[in-house]
Length: 285
Image 1 (cartoon, helix red, strand yellow):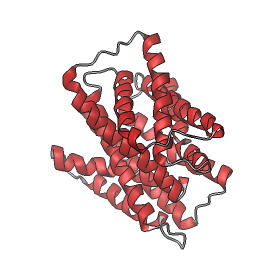
Image 2: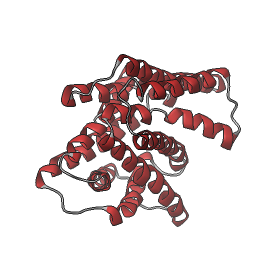
Image 3: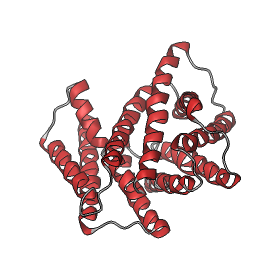
Image 4: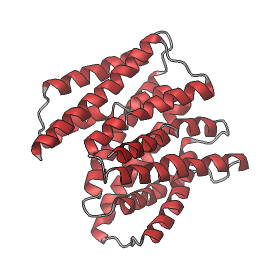
């Protein structure tokens, strides 16, 4: 069991580097669409090789193509691009914290789509995240309304990512599901991509595909064989902590006292939702 938690920790730590790579690539003048395109392209090559080595076939029922087109649009084209764009117009710390408003969107969608009750702890988590967002965007270092809007949209598409992933793995292996999601996402990115990139940016693009995309996903997938999803989600909240620490060390990004409190509220609200989900699933079993 300890090994499973370690794998989740390592996976979340690689995800915490996403905004760092985006910031470096922004320095090369690459658009978010171009960053995401090459991230996805290299990840597809890596994942395709992995599937071949694992003996996992590429066959897919024709009826599933529409689903993966939808999945690729929201989870790759929109989610990845919105996150990278938010990083480029604000900061790594700001973008990753708004990304972690996703559990609140999931909670609201659960209420609207599945009729799940909004119990006391969920309302507390909602209030924590809302207050946290206000504090993170306050204290005299406010980012633009555009950054706030796109950051919140990133959290929403991240929540959709999780919902659609549950439907994907019902019929396909997780690795195959990711492969086709990336493939369709690549198609949507094609019209917006500048294919001419500086040579110096290529190592960063490959590393972006290798670490937070390919290795991070494989580590997390293996961890779920030993750790419950709800418990893994709690450990995975180390991601924004890693991102904020790296942003401070590499770019000198600093959070004020109020913003640190806001960060704690957002992460705490996310943990609270996941803890209650874990208790619910434990009672159900």
